[in-house]
Image (cartoon, rainbow, N blue to C red; front, side, top):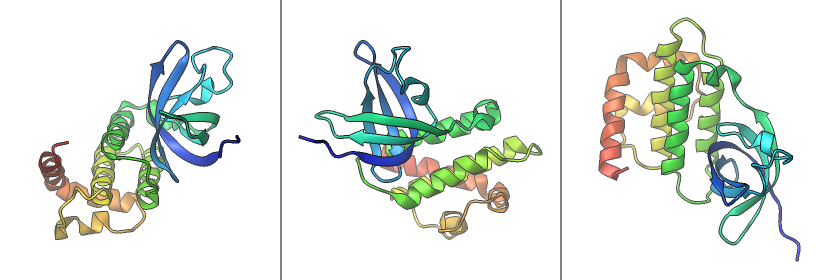
Length: 198
């Protein structure tokens, strides 16, 4: 019986060893939400998929359903976001965003608006200007986390935050405008975490 192939794009949020040579990855995808999938023999040096299975990569992925986990049958790197991972001021906030997604996104359900906001945020993180880069990265992390919480229903409706969670593109002007209210936004985020016990 032929298995249906699902082609989509996504961010590899995490990867861990599985059995002798396999790995298990968590992928936040455009079409399927958060999926956990195995890559057979990915720790074998001869594996064709191994170079593309790096944590935090943005990939084109082909999956088939398995009994316990999805199975990866095709994988190609679209971007590894080198400017982010070579700069600690950018890498730490981005890693925290990915960890939050793995923790909060529940189940295999398409969330195209959430995916678009995360993708825009990561793309913007990679091109932040050198001037005040650390400050911009903190603002952008806060902005993306607000949108993640909003899309997942964890964020209360507050007029102060409306401009930041509205369906508008993420750009540097919006990131800069986060500075005066970032402390209040962080307090709201922390309250949302406490209320949801996450």
